[in-house]
Length: 146
Image (tube, rainbow, N blue to C red):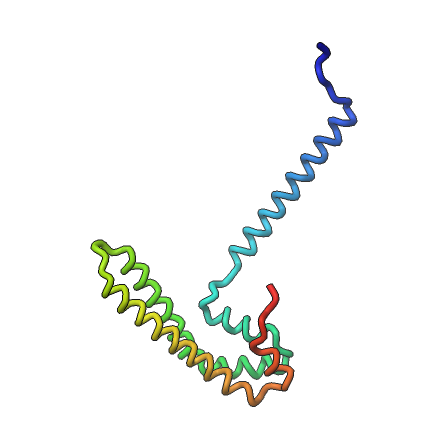
């Protein structure tokens, strides 16, 4: 039986294809890791500001940032309260022995913290809305494309 062999040209194409595929995969993984590393947590002042102003015309974005800045200390405080309440829920779920009543109380506190954060965000929106253009008001809360 004759051994199987490839021509040198075929071998070169296979090696080149393999090299290109490896370079592509490494670049794809590198870009994915870079994007993931630089992504802000969704529950942060910067993320709220970016999500709410990114779709606005520049003049409206500036107006909205001013309204955010006016309530920034309260928003930061509310965000920290939500984070703390979620940490409390995690600790409660991991505690031994498990206590359902403690978990329910932690969930209730978390709901209150999130409601307070939403109320503050609503206040920012209602403060800024009269100053925004019609286009800005329309685009403020529309769903963003991913």
